[in-house]
Image (tube, rainbow, N blue to C red; front, side, top):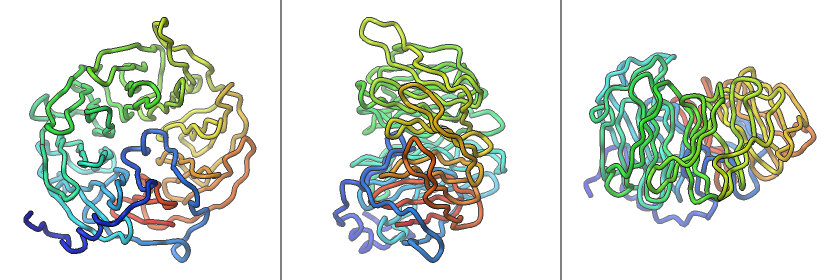
Length: 406
């Protein structure tokens, strides 16, 4: 393999040969789509002087969350006034050193602004590859060493992406497919591509309309895919062939948060009061799901709901957190956090972590009673965009920095 710029072959091989713990897996947006971290020992408190493992300046800027597989961290970034350079990055989980950088060119020119997504879709990783999707249409798979295995332009194949805010939906892995959603003001679709070849396994047309919601894969339900965000409804698809299994209509305000599955059902988040709810999945003889409860007051906007230890957590646009009983929807407590949250809350050990956009991180007891354990300051200027959790550590993504606390 020809050495690529920006990485040391010796150090790259050392990182690959390191033996990671089983916990060093956070392979997609919100991990497996639930924001539940495995293991214990996650830090409650951190600052620039405490529990800071490393702080790496990144080449380029991005809004995607980091993903982890074994000893490597993968994320995306871009550079240029029109996103001329798109980058896939790999860092060492242990040291934060940049192992390699692979650049690709966009097929759609999009002017960079604060209103348009900037390398927003989060990649997905498995034992063989890392899969990447950019809002300029590039869709590709790379080996863990940074070699491109296949590459497509969904813009060239299906038409340019339209809309004021760009594409933000992240990739999801299901069975042998990589699931991608393109929901914008033009022809929209959900597709599953073969992991090894990149060719479509299936493709479904979707209603036009911008949505940043990411598909969820129900691991307890034959990897059934559930999708919110387009057409004000919730749809379920068979992951093997993309066939529609059922739909739930009448939902509003669900174009950003992703549904959160749990055994037997899912929580659906919405920015509109009365449309945050828990559903029960249909049985074999039932045509569709049933609504278990609707939240009376709780809403969520940028964040996806969290299900953790018999509670459901929501954060509204203003940074107010709600804790509800998963069984009944009863509101157990409500508190204002340090600030607005863009990162979905994470459950780890006995704690719930709320990462505010600029003000820092609130750490609460995972309990039906409100108890704040810590209030951590921001570690860099700018916005906290995404977090990965593994090996009793958090990787916190700012636009051009990745920071590990442990």
